[in-house]
Length: 239
Length: 239
Image (cartoon, rainbow over all chains, first blue to last red; front, side, top):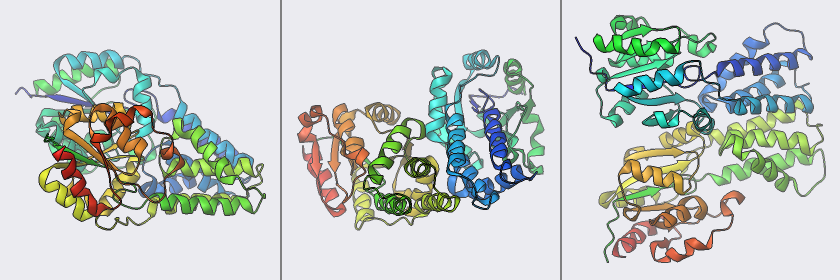
């Protein structure tokens, strides 16, 4: 069987460029700051609990994370956090927003190769303003036919995008590092996926994959590096 | 002359529903909080200066405003702001994100009437996650053919959207409360505008309008209330 893969979607953070590392660095620094007030080994978990509680209100992205860090710092220190340290936390968030866009080795060539045979689009979730800035700084925007920044990457979102693109799910494959956001919802719709794990994954993205997605293993490929992506897409086309 | 106005765009905040009032309330409360540390009458201006400085990094929206309020509170109080008051400022931001969506009187009927003769789309700038939540809560989303949430409303953005819609600027009119964001860029491209001022305008939106836009007064109408919008659109069609 030959699959007619008309369009290939690429995730952005930790698929095209490094991202989670910068969030991790900010969170480590946050732990050092609150660690000067109180001796605890679960600052990380308490921050994640605040982030998760706020997700329905803030959505994804560095600004929401920074507000959650500030809220968690007040909570963890029993309101003893100083104005100076609050300011340091704001600066941590700004550093994440300003981090350089460092492409993963070989990704530009992989996108370029895949774009010769397929339409390629970028589909990323998170903060509109920050994601647009990163796309601009990446130098990759001309390779993509469309750039879609969405608030959540679930089956409803992918279904809406495929309708806008006038494609059947079977004509679409998504490439990304998150099983939860990039792979499972597309497989569930009947599309294909190429999973390229990143060396670190945010706890939220690492949550369990529903067993229903495991029925679709013939529509899933897995690679370790960007240089393996074109062959994985060709393998999906070959069926 | 009859104008072929194929599509009418609506702004959202302060055009479909109340918004700026909630930001004003948060800022008044911010001034009360920092006012307990220091006696000054320019807290408002100092907050706006911080917001403006951060705009290129944060973009528009309540999360960025909240981070700017926290930064300004540290700055204005010489770092004396307490953890308790920092938390109150975070809560002010959350209140803005959760405010009820209160439609302007008559706007649902006006959109519905205009939608009988034209395609209507919603074009709003700001935080993707918050704007999507407000659109959902408004109950108006089914009236709009497309909902576009953008990071900036300038001529480049409107030109990109019109290209996606496959429309010439002369086939498009934009309805909104901000001359800077809703009216001037569309007039500059050759489109039409209906200005519906809101009773309060954020300083950033109230900045001067370039004189070039004044050449296009035959493509501009102005109304005081939503109930006047259908007639204003008909007047633009009549040319």
